[in-house]
Amino acid sequence: MQYKISPSLMCMSLFDIKEQLAVLNRRADMLHIDIMDGHYVKNITLSPFFIEQIRPHTPLILDVHMMVENPTDFIEAIAKAGADFICPHAETINRDAFRVINQIRGLGKKVGVVLNPATPVEFIQQYIHLLDKITVMTVDPGYAGQPFIPEMLNKVRQLRDLKQQHGYKYLIEIDGSCNVRTYHDLMAAGAEVLIVGSSGLFNLHEDLDTAWETMLGHMRQARHAA
Figure (cartoon, rainbow, N blue to C red):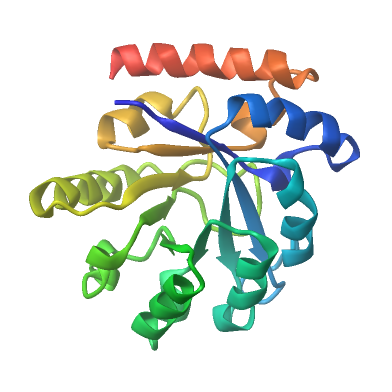
């Protein structure tokens, strides 16, 4: 299986954003952008304005993770800023999931949902067939650098099995502690997109090209073992 790599831009050095983005443009499959409102999670990171600023400078897919209490307040702005995937948390949209999905589709964007560690796959069973991507949080949301929650491997396996059984088209994405300690288990379970952040990429070496090669070496070993 070919795995997609999605660096988390909240973990990059904003002092070196031009140089680091040039490296990622040559190497990454997509870019992961976290939008936090300070309410759904107790943190504030990037914004639709950030998406608008980098959109002209990258050809990559922009995958936007919405850690916000009211996604409909942000969806149109995120779409206009240049996002490709718009991914709210399932916990925030289940009152009006079909309306939110239709809104995102109507704006010409792909639809994802994000599942917190304590949220079961059954929570999205009524609209799972409509999704382009499902993100499994393997840490509690809001902050980088948290420890991996191994119980989430069963959720990844469940999504893989459902996809195979029903012919669903969604990508299975992992957000949280994707690194040398977890690559093997995640790949074996059925992960297809790995979001790499502080522990998987940006803190491996001060030079991002060198860090990327180190990360790829870890992934090759894990892929061979899986």
